[in-house]
Length: 264
Ligand code: IPD
Ligand code: CA
Ligand code: CA
Image 1: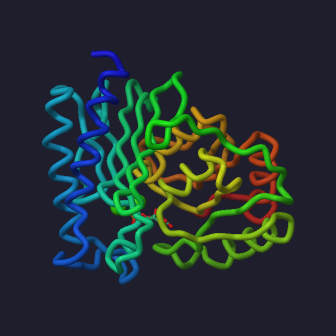
Image 2 (image 1 turned 90 degrees about the horizontal axis):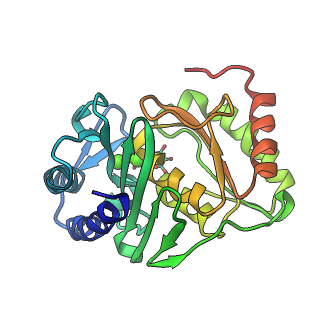
């Protein structure tokens, strides 16, 4: 099956998954820290996606956030965050999304990020551009000083908060302003759609950025990890993204100035 046909099948499945992100009546549980939540909706969305996506490619593997589900030892692997922005979701804040990537041979070839409460569906197929609700999107051409910088304070590993705040301060002083929305997948898509220009998080998981990093690249944006190479699809990664290479290089050199070595 060609990638275009696969993407056409993922999109309605993502929209159906979004219907499971009900506004009320779900349970909220803590994971390893009190800041790290999982809801019954995260589990329901993941179970639904695993069932429906397996029908598209029966031999594909899965790598999903909840319950350490899946393994990467397959030619095709679905990399899934059932709800990115669970803390927002649990409080009724609409900045939350379903993130679905398909990797082949270790490279993402299709990505869908769907934010049901905002009715925004981003998608990309490798080599074919990026789209928001079916219309093409493009990263902006704003320079650093006009850029909006989206970031976070390392919510689940608060021992990194001081270094994050130093990096954030440094970029903030040279850019337009800072935002913290709470769904990395949507934020990377917002760089792709030209709404924001810069993104930094100290430690994200592959399911946070797999789909969105393809969407960003297809929209002309760029992203990388601490080593300046693409973020890993198997391990957590520091995550930098920007509307263009010049801003990404500036972000990377700022991070390295404050952080000579990756602390994990
Ligand atoms: C989180 C969100 C958040 C980011 C965290 C992620 P989750 O994902 O993307 O914006 O700051 O680092 O873990 O836990 O809601 O799936
Ligand atoms: Ca996530
Ligand atoms: Ca999640």
